[in-house]
Image 1 (spheres, rainbow, N blue to C red):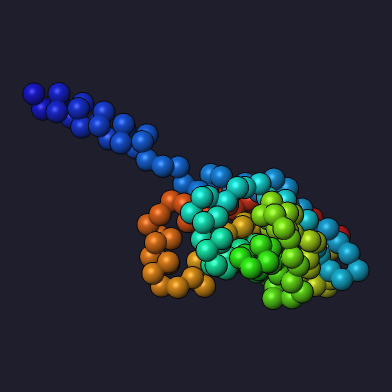
Image 2 (image 1 turned 180 degrees about the vertical axis):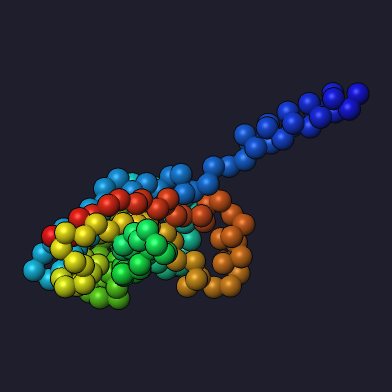
Length: 187
Protein backbone atom coordinates (compact mmCIF):
# COMPACT_ATOMS: atom_id res chain seq x y z
CA UNK A 1 0.00 0.00 0.00
CA UNK A 2 2.78 2.45 0.92
CA UNK A 3 4.75 1.38 -2.15
CA UNK A 4 1.77 2.11 -4.40
CA UNK A 5 1.32 5.50 -2.75
CA UNK A 6 5.01 6.37 -3.33
CA UNK A 7 4.78 5.31 -6.99
CA UNK A 8 1.69 7.43 -7.46
CA UNK A 9 3.36 10.38 -5.74
CA UNK A 10 6.49 10.11 -7.91
CA UNK A 11 4.40 9.79 -11.08
CA UNK A 12 2.37 12.88 -10.18
CA UNK A 13 5.53 14.88 -9.45
CA UNK A 14 7.05 13.90 -12.79
CA UNK A 15 3.87 14.85 -14.65
CA UNK A 16 3.62 18.15 -12.77
CA UNK A 17 7.25 19.02 -13.56
CA UNK A 18 6.72 18.21 -17.23
CA UNK A 19 3.71 20.53 -17.42
CA UNK A 20 5.50 23.56 -15.95
CA UNK A 21 6.25 26.34 -18.43
CA UNK A 22 9.82 26.50 -19.66
CA UNK A 23 12.05 29.18 -18.21
CA UNK A 24 12.67 32.07 -20.55
CA UNK A 25 16.42 31.58 -20.16
CA UNK A 26 16.03 28.59 -22.49
CA UNK A 27 14.89 30.95 -25.24
CA UNK A 28 17.81 33.40 -24.98
CA UNK A 29 21.01 31.95 -26.36
CA UNK A 30 24.50 33.33 -26.79
CA UNK A 31 25.26 32.36 -30.39
CA UNK A 32 28.69 33.95 -30.60
CA UNK A 33 31.03 35.61 -28.14
CA UNK A 34 34.68 36.41 -28.69
CA UNK A 35 37.24 38.98 -27.59
CA UNK A 36 39.16 40.96 -30.20
CA UNK A 37 42.17 43.21 -29.67
CA UNK A 38 41.94 46.70 -31.14
CA UNK A 39 43.76 50.01 -30.73
CA UNK A 40 41.28 51.02 -28.00
CA UNK A 41 41.60 47.78 -26.02
CA UNK A 42 39.86 44.44 -25.86
CA UNK A 43 36.43 44.44 -27.51
CA UNK A 44 33.55 41.99 -27.33
CA UNK A 45 31.97 40.69 -30.52
CA UNK A 46 28.72 38.93 -29.59
CA UNK A 47 25.48 37.69 -31.11
CA UNK A 48 22.33 36.60 -29.27
CA UNK A 49 19.29 34.69 -30.43
CA UNK A 50 15.87 35.35 -28.85
CA UNK A 51 12.28 36.41 -29.32
CA UNK A 52 10.44 38.61 -26.87
CA UNK A 53 7.56 36.99 -25.00
CA UNK A 54 4.05 38.27 -25.64
CA UNK A 55 4.05 39.86 -22.16
CA UNK A 56 7.18 41.89 -22.96
CA UNK A 57 5.86 42.92 -26.39
CA UNK A 58 2.58 43.98 -24.82
CA UNK A 59 4.32 45.99 -22.09
CA UNK A 60 6.51 47.67 -24.69
CA UNK A 61 3.60 48.70 -26.92
CA UNK A 62 1.77 50.08 -23.87
CA UNK A 63 4.55 52.53 -23.08
CA UNK A 64 6.92 50.61 -20.82
CA UNK A 65 10.63 51.14 -21.47
CA UNK A 66 12.67 47.93 -21.38
CA UNK A 67 16.36 47.82 -20.51
CA UNK A 68 18.62 44.94 -21.51
CA UNK A 69 22.10 44.44 -20.05
CA UNK A 70 24.92 42.65 -21.81
CA UNK A 71 27.41 41.70 -19.10
CA UNK A 72 30.99 40.54 -19.54
CA UNK A 73 33.20 39.40 -16.68
CA UNK A 74 36.89 38.64 -17.20
CA UNK A 75 38.68 36.49 -14.62
CA UNK A 76 42.09 34.89 -14.43
CA UNK A 77 42.14 31.37 -12.99
CA UNK A 78 44.51 30.75 -10.07
CA UNK A 79 45.32 27.36 -8.64
CA UNK A 80 46.11 28.65 -5.15
CA UNK A 81 43.11 30.89 -4.48
CA UNK A 82 39.88 32.18 -5.96
CA UNK A 83 39.98 33.39 -9.55
CA UNK A 84 41.29 36.93 -9.91
CA UNK A 85 38.52 39.22 -11.18
CA UNK A 86 39.78 41.72 -13.69
CA UNK A 87 36.79 43.45 -15.08
CA UNK A 88 33.00 43.52 -15.15
CA UNK A 89 31.73 45.45 -18.15
CA UNK A 90 28.08 46.18 -18.82
CA UNK A 91 26.35 47.64 -21.84
CA UNK A 92 22.74 48.74 -21.38
CA UNK A 93 20.41 48.93 -24.38
CA UNK A 94 17.09 50.69 -23.83
CA UNK A 95 14.08 50.19 -26.08
CA UNK A 96 10.82 52.14 -25.97
CA UNK A 97 7.79 52.50 -28.25
CA UNK A 98 6.22 55.85 -29.15
CA UNK A 99 2.54 55.26 -30.04
CA UNK A 100 2.16 58.68 -31.69
CA UNK A 101 4.92 58.17 -34.25
CA UNK A 102 4.57 54.35 -34.21
CA UNK A 103 8.34 54.07 -33.88
CA UNK A 104 10.68 52.19 -31.58
CA UNK A 105 13.45 54.21 -29.94
CA UNK A 106 16.68 52.41 -29.06
CA UNK A 107 19.68 53.84 -27.23
CA UNK A 108 22.89 52.22 -26.07
CA UNK A 109 24.26 53.36 -22.69
CA UNK A 110 22.00 56.41 -22.76
CA UNK A 111 23.69 57.74 -25.90
CA UNK A 112 22.33 58.66 -29.30
CA UNK A 113 18.78 57.41 -29.87
CA UNK A 114 17.96 55.54 -33.07
CA UNK A 115 14.43 55.17 -34.42
CA UNK A 116 12.98 52.09 -36.10
CA UNK A 117 9.57 51.37 -37.63
CA UNK A 118 9.55 47.67 -36.74
CA UNK A 119 10.30 45.79 -33.55
CA UNK A 120 12.54 43.31 -35.38
CA UNK A 121 14.78 46.12 -36.62
CA UNK A 122 14.94 47.61 -33.13
CA UNK A 123 15.84 44.27 -31.55
CA UNK A 124 18.77 43.90 -33.95
CA UNK A 125 20.83 46.28 -31.77
CA UNK A 126 20.23 44.00 -28.79
CA UNK A 127 20.80 40.77 -30.69
CA UNK A 128 24.00 42.03 -32.31
CA UNK A 129 25.53 44.68 -30.04
CA UNK A 130 28.28 46.78 -31.56
CA UNK A 131 31.82 45.85 -30.61
CA UNK A 132 32.53 47.65 -27.36
CA UNK A 133 35.56 47.85 -25.15
CA UNK A 134 35.39 45.47 -22.18
CA UNK A 135 39.00 45.92 -20.99
CA UNK A 136 41.67 48.55 -21.52
CA UNK A 137 44.64 47.63 -23.68
CA UNK A 138 47.15 47.30 -20.83
CA UNK A 139 44.75 45.64 -18.42
CA UNK A 140 45.36 42.05 -19.63
CA UNK A 141 48.84 40.57 -19.69
CA UNK A 142 49.80 39.25 -23.16
CA UNK A 143 50.20 35.48 -23.20
CA UNK A 144 48.04 34.86 -20.11
CA UNK A 145 44.81 32.90 -20.40
CA UNK A 146 41.59 34.46 -19.05
CA UNK A 147 38.08 33.17 -18.58
CA UNK A 148 35.36 35.34 -20.11
CA UNK A 149 31.70 35.09 -19.02
CA UNK A 150 29.03 36.66 -21.23
CA UNK A 151 25.28 36.93 -20.66
CA UNK A 152 22.25 38.99 -21.69
CA UNK A 153 19.36 39.79 -19.34
CA UNK A 154 16.38 42.04 -18.84
CA UNK A 155 17.15 44.70 -16.22
CA UNK A 156 14.18 44.22 -13.89
CA UNK A 157 15.55 46.62 -11.26
CA UNK A 158 14.44 49.63 -13.30
CA UNK A 159 10.83 48.47 -13.45
CA UNK A 160 8.28 49.82 -11.01
CA UNK A 161 7.86 47.76 -7.83
CA UNK A 162 4.55 46.11 -8.87
CA UNK A 163 6.11 45.07 -12.18
CA UNK A 164 9.18 43.73 -10.40
CA UNK A 165 6.93 41.43 -8.36
CA UNK A 166 5.10 40.39 -11.53
CA UNK A 167 8.42 39.78 -13.28
CA UNK A 168 9.50 37.41 -10.51
CA UNK A 169 6.27 35.41 -10.66
CA UNK A 170 5.55 35.42 -14.39
CA UNK A 171 7.54 33.25 -16.81
CA UNK A 172 6.91 35.75 -19.64
CA UNK A 173 9.06 38.30 -17.82
CA UNK A 174 12.00 35.97 -17.22
CA UNK A 175 14.47 37.04 -19.86
CA UNK A 176 18.02 35.92 -19.22
CA UNK A 177 20.55 33.89 -21.14
CA UNK A 178 22.70 31.23 -19.60
CA UNK A 179 26.23 32.46 -19.00
CA UNK A 180 28.57 31.52 -21.82
CA UNK A 181 32.11 30.93 -20.62
CA UNK A 182 35.14 30.71 -22.89
CA UNK A 183 38.90 31.05 -22.59
CA UNK A 184 40.86 33.88 -24.17
CA UNK A 185 44.62 34.11 -24.53
CA UNK A 186 45.54 37.80 -24.37
CA UNK A 187 47.52 39.22 -27.26
